[in-house]
Image 1 (cartoon, rainbow, N blue to C red):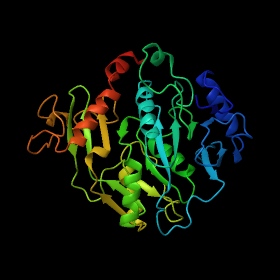
Image 2: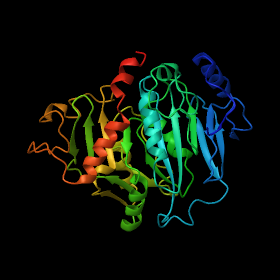
Image 3: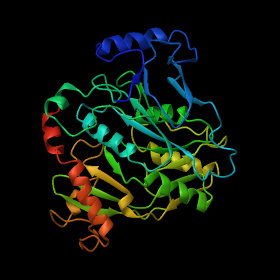
Image 4: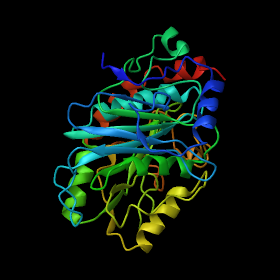
Length: 352
């Protein structure tokens, strides 16, 4: 088991967290988490990177500040993306208790990434579960296949439940990343192929861009065992898939304090700031976005009504033609089904 190094356990009631946050908000002081025993930050050892974790508690005007301070610069300059960057996967979680199942699966997807240096930063506003601590009792009771212990190189900050909208939570994540790092949104209920980080990073180097989105992904529906190729005809790619090289130009650009559509606005602000950006015509199998019934958007938004059939993979909705064109896509569909084999049981067992 990887040691989870923090100083405050989350067996305490949610009220204790709120009290800590309220007391901390009286004085806005930046300090390392080792100097602030009550900091709501937990982390695991990271053998591939050496950094300190700094934390400033929230105030009435300011978000909580999390910062990863590396002992050595993570990039030699800011003109070009490093060929072998340090990646930061930024995960927002905490919507409901069932999302612990998906978030632990997404954490497993992070573990399998082929990138040499990677850090998972989790912003969690749930008072019910943590990803750097033990599995919740309901998940343990059903003997699910989720990761029971956190992997190396994970940092989790827990914030006051329901206080912040999605745009605020995203800002906590991007502000934690050091200059020269490459950060990527890491949804808590999706699956990324193990080459997702590295191939996106290589495309950023090849295209000389500092912000990159993907153009296509599979949208998979568990109840139907069906998927279609989502490839919207928009110039800036798919919202929620952005990978960014954090430069002095990019750093001041923040998400708007919105619960929805914050991704679209952020991409627009990158273009307005003339940040070199592109949408990559990627292999679709790099990214599986799931519809499981407790998504932010409803089933019709995900176009479930357009699926031609059940047990149909890689559908092309305009023609209703289904069937994956290459063996890799078939293999990854089968792999994803195996990884999430107990999803229905988890959704049924999760506390409402």
